[in-house]
Length: 138
Image (tube, rainbow, N blue to C red; front, top):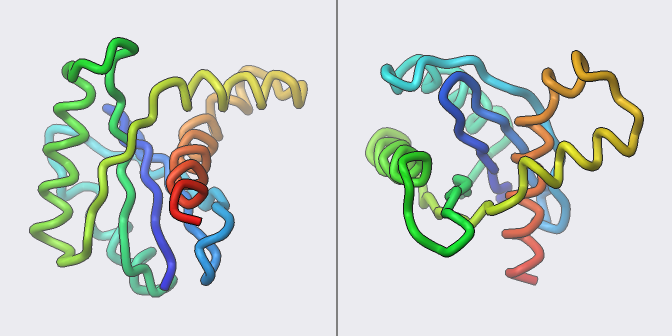
């Protein structure tokens, strides 16, 4: 009964997963993909879902600061719809405003080099998206 959290970008998807009780989120990996070909991410996502007994997916929904929907939010909506059709799991869009900036701040405070931050920023953003969702449902 785990929940998967995704931070969907143009070239990478940050992936986080909850514990079995849906209390905490942990980052697991960053998937490289081609946003113009959704199926480039699907095999790895299916594997993660099967291996971890995922029952729900939370996709970050990057609204603009004023609450409007921009190009990135539309792209996330379209990917979420695609996942619903192919994975037959509930998919929830979750407001992710400022999660990437917050993740960057955490990594800066941890004194992580720019090169290392680049490798983990999407995974950390996925953790923040999923943890926010889990906290709202407690």
